[in-house]
Image 1: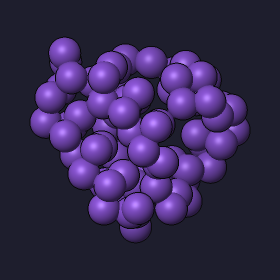
Image 2: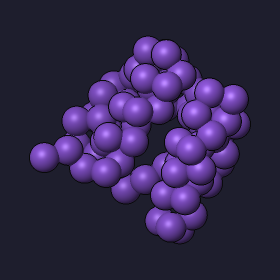
Image 3: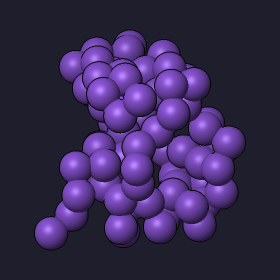
Length: 76
């Protein structure tokens, strides 16, 4: 079963209509890291990564932007 963070990362990628490489570039990670996180999950995004993603998501999926921020701040 996929973890909450895995599903969240896939939803972010789909909402932004970007590749794993592009998603990684947004948050300073490699395509391989994104693949690993989507497959096995991650401890969660740090606050800076979450803020960057939320800013990109807000115009297209404000609900998902809020979820990204909530997850990051909950994990910290």
